[in-house]
Amino acid sequence: MSSRAAWRLESFGFSQVFDYTAGKLDWLANGFPRAGKRAALPRAADVVRLDIPQCRLTDRLEDVREKVQAAGQNACVVVNDAGIVLGFLGREALKGIPVASVAGAMDPGPTTIRPHMMLTEVPKYLHKQAMDRILVTTAEGRFVGILYRQDAEQILDEEKSRQLYKPRVALSD
Image (cartoon, rainbow, N blue to C red; front, side, top):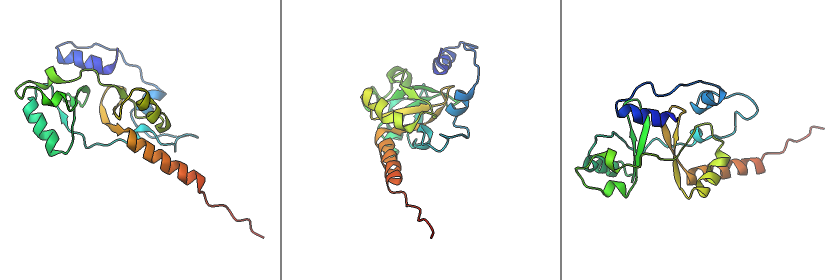
């Protein structure tokens, strides 16, 4: 069971719904320091934006809509008090009945990726899913940020340019 699903069950009053065993991927998924040959390669966590508003299950759509507009955004990530992603409110969901709660309007299963995902894989994945952005979460489902395909492509293009235009080392006489 995913950690996000477990947290959602907790919001319904259930407890102790998953067993967790940590490992190397979990270390990377939580954005902890990397070492080794591929440590310097850009990952999803290196490109996330933190400027997307967050809201709670019990918030009213009207209040969330105002918060989202004030932030200059068109979406909101639904999180609990521990920062675990429970859902996503996109542009269309925000147009719902103003007094309705977020819980009834949100997408309860937004697609996410982990912070350690190689950045080279992100644009391909988003293109395949017909998405222009994706939420980045830890293995426990804690919100890290939002990653836009455009940002990933820009960073990859810059990396490629740096590789193509490396200064040549002059041999001394």
